[in-house]
Image (tube, rainbow, N blue to C red; front, side, top):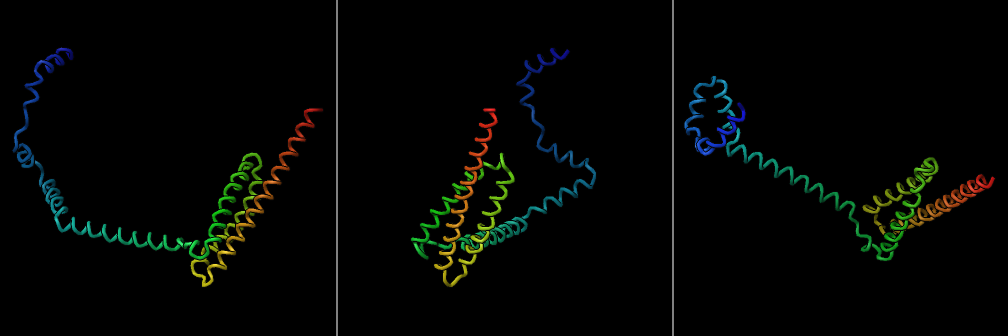
Length: 187
């Protein structure tokens, strides 16, 4: 039976496609709806008036303006031009910051095999990093920015030295482990 119906639809497809509902069909349906549906339609129509749309647009403009001002204020806060304070110190800051990042990645290589050792190393660097962040915040308001920048670079130098020492300890630890493994294999 379904095969016959499909065949009927295929053969008469053009006749089915040209039929469209009349233009006043919805108006006739609305007449038979209960009154509560007509009230909802009237309330919805009033919601999107020109005044409502303008109020929403104005609210969006105000919110976007406030967010833009906050964004600009935040970027100015962290945006001290180190090169304007002292170009030599600015280059040193970039140099030490990149060294620290490289060494931190090397130290992080033991995180899975020796989590306790990594946690101890990381806590030492985190303390110095928090001091660096305090100095960076102080740089914004300090009357002697060059001195604060010099202290920041000194902090970065110390972090570099500590990370180098940590990497030496890791290297010695790995050598000791390898020696123990070789000794146990030879037995």
